[in-house]
Image (cartoon, rainbow, N blue to C red; front, side, top):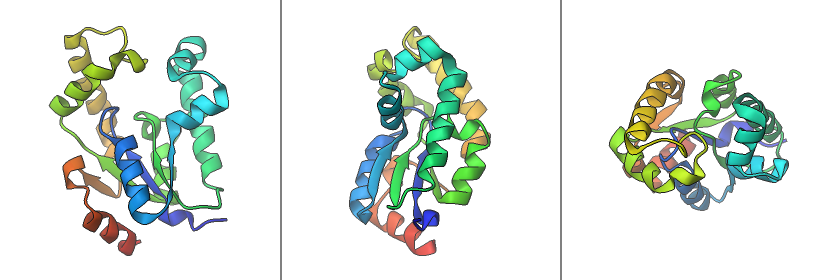
Length: 173
């Protein structure tokens, strides 16, 4: 079994840069990078949109939790980009904090909106929304999710993720 306490879990809203920063950080510290959405797609053989539309959000959330729990037994240390909602369901945030280093990539609504507007067709929760609807969705979800994200051990904006910051996190743990 690995030293799970040094695994890094990136949390935050969709569009916050979890996958981007996960790859950067994993290269910095020579850990494996895993993306929760990619793991779900592999296991289900369907896109995220298909899983949502065919099986519903509860199934999706339970599947995320199942994969998360499996990851706690992996041999190699890793950096994981979690799904945006993962920390908010099934007591997952508590488990993330017990099993590793949690970082909330906290980006402002305007940044999330600009990024997500370009990606809306790939986002099951956004694909049917207008531009105003997307902004409202982001504000509502961020308000709902902040109490969970706030439980992360570190809260940082993407612009503040530096090699020094990551090095300090690793040293502290």
